[in-house]
Length: 301
Image: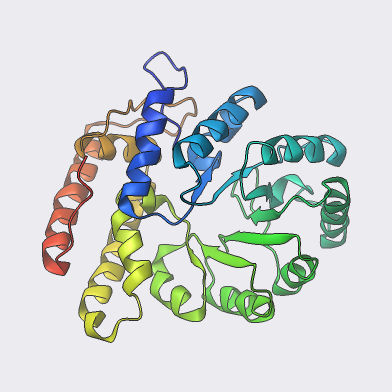
């Protein structure tokens, strides 16, 4: 999810409620609040809790919400905030893999920290996010299996960009029915879903969530092979423009869709200049053309 701000940089809770309703209207089956797209590192703990509370309240139990709860420091401090996040009513609290061990620390150290976090957080359901900030620590299939087998880890957002790794992770975690792997990389979204990914957790959902929902629902429909191929190719063709100066670009795109959201950012992602705006304008036009080809409707605002 995104975090809407006012033009003066304060959290816009009215816009956050509208944005949450927009995701739900698009058919999202779950929401990831307080993540990198939410500018979580530019929020303080009080703001993080306030945002999560607002999203949980706005969903009113209609879909599960997960939210990040680890932001570095001693594991004991991270565990305390995990419990605070869980008290908001989320289904699981997400741990950032790159904040449980440094880039120069071994997998053994990371595994030990995870075990410590599990011990210190009672029975709180946890998940992992291979967040690219502060650096990307990708879990192996063996590590993921080890953690999921505890019965405490129910969610994993995969950013390995490697379909072979994803297939390996799905294979070893298949016996654990409460667990789901959610892929972030849309270049192989169809293959990932066919391999058994529980869903897609991607920035493209902050441009056109109804398209991602449609893909999750229809990727394996034999009567829609042509349309599924068109969607997959569209996601590949427009990958660069959607990632450029994101999430400013996404907020601008949502403005064109009629959502009242400022493009204000607390994080510096670069200059959203005229050329980049024109790229998003073209994306909007191409998306409208795609909708006509596959015969689905945009969410009305």
